[in-house]
Image 1 (spheres, rainbow, N blue to C red):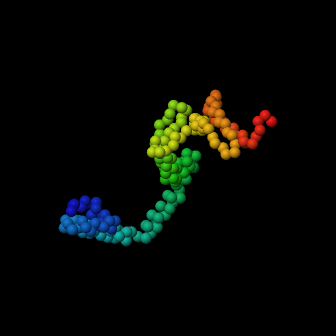
Image 2 (image 1 turned 30 degrees about the vertical axis):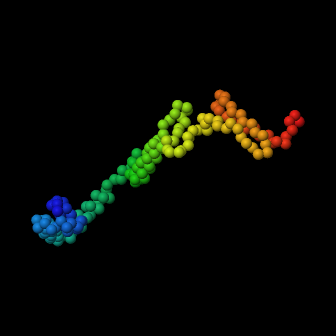
Length: 178
């Protein structure tokens, strides 16, 4: 069993913590008893000193305290003191918001993966996950299209606006040349 520190024994004597398991040591028990006796002596001395002061003197002391509180001028609130006061009152909310935003940004950067040279298109590095690219940068992948009851033609175009796919569908019962 570790020897208790004096601060632990003082906390036990004051009733702040329960260190009964540490009081098995006779020296620790003696220190706690000595702290209790000293506490009683100081408390008794202060009570006797307070009883020795006449009540009129107490009234004078309280009147002086009340006057000093009333005469203290209130400082005018500046814009900066108001802003500082707001941050002081809402410090926990502000810190929580900043930490949350930082965590989300870090998570987004980690999950985003490496950037490619083709205008910022990104790919996901997970297992079996699809390639993620902005619509303007997706290559055309449609070569043909089967449409029941109609003929379809697929045009893959590349121009200055980027790649595009046009699908032309014509019903089968349409007679050409009309």
